[in-house]
Amino acid sequence: MADNLVHSGAYSFVCQVGTIEEITNIRIGGGYSDETFTIVYHFGSLIEAIETRTSNRELQWQIPAKFYAQIPNAKMGIGYLECHRYRNDALYRTDTCDLTVYCNEERNKPVMTIDAKDTGKTLPTGYKTTDLTGSNKKIIKGVSDVNVTVTATAKNYSSLVSYNTYNGEEFARNRLGAIFYETVSNKFSATSTDSRGFSTSVSESLEMAEYENIKTTEIIFKRISQTSSNVKFSVKGTYFNGNFGAINNTITLKYRYKEAGTNTWSEYASLTLVKNNNSFSYSNNALLTDLNYQKAYNFEFVLTDKINIYTIPLTITKGIPVMDMGESDVNINGTLTKNKEEILSETVLYSNASGTTGTVTLSESAANFKELLITYHRQGVYYITRVIRNPNGKTVALTGKYGDANLMQINSKLITINGKTITVNVEIFANIYSNNTISAFGTQNGIYISEVVGRR
Image 1 (tube, helix red, strand yellow):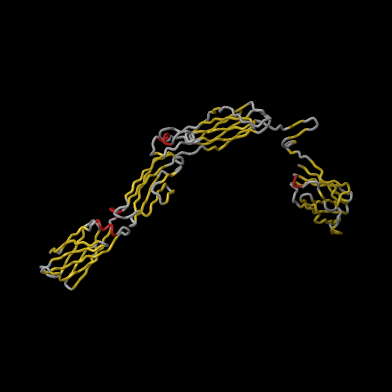
Image 2 (cartoon, rainbow, N blue to C red; image 1 turned 180 degrees about the horizontal axis):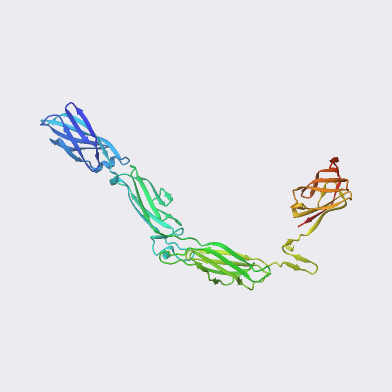
């Protein structure tokens, strides 16, 4: 270690850098062989003689523990020593040297303890977590609440200035101890730092059961047909098929039902699940066979393991017959098809025997229909019907032609369908002879729209 030296001519006074509560060396040089020495330290508010009128020039001195009180917020401190030289009982000279002392970290860092325990909370099923694991030192992943008790004590006149408690990546800032809820990590720790900057950390790991919540991957629930009293139900999913420590996990399924709009439920009925490793399933094409198709029903299916109760509310709606035959009409529910082709109902949206070459106003918006049938003609020469699918917002051409062996005229009207309106953008024509020459080309108003029918 380095020396603190003060020289005065042939005189020397040296004190080694030291650590509180440990031995340091003091050496005195020069002067007279018959002189004596009194050594005094000055440190903070402390002044005290180490040796009085000694003739020993090599001293070993244990730096006293009471120095800690002078530096509660620092790892080291600086004072000084005085060497008073006496000859023939008379003081003839005083030498000084710096006194640098340090605090040993191991003797001064905070003292800490940690104790992590499952709180044993009560679960929805009535079990406590500690009932399932058999110990407050074993936890269930994502389920257990853990109470972490931490103590921390500063030493040798220092004070605690910061402390945190951790559970995996979660932490409680400026808290000694905490409760961590539904923890997913089994590692717990705490740290504290004192006013000198010394830190301590403690940790504890608990055994953990790797629990997974009940999950459904498929549910099918419906009448066999619209007017059937038979109800089909199937479910598939996954669960934790393992041991918590004291008890094995299990899973069960039950259900009850009532008529919609009423308050009286049936008794619960149990269903037997098929289990395979971590998977479960149930399927029945005739869960119930006596549900009136003219009524709706509410069902509750309940999956239960040792930890959770998972309720699945489902509804069977009132059945709707495909065909409802009244006294004067027949109502079709759904899509009417012929040879697998959909048959659409038709509504006349515009009709004018003479037709118009201008804007057509429809009785309903084209957006309400899957198809529009537009019938148009050319001065009584030809009649054509064009089908426009998904018509609303489209721009299309109405085209026709007529003629003989020598001459053919082609007409085309460009229209836009938007809501209740069909507007004309432009109409053109061309006369084409058999020798492929064109004798005329231009615009005209020769195509008349006489009828628009909507299909849906």
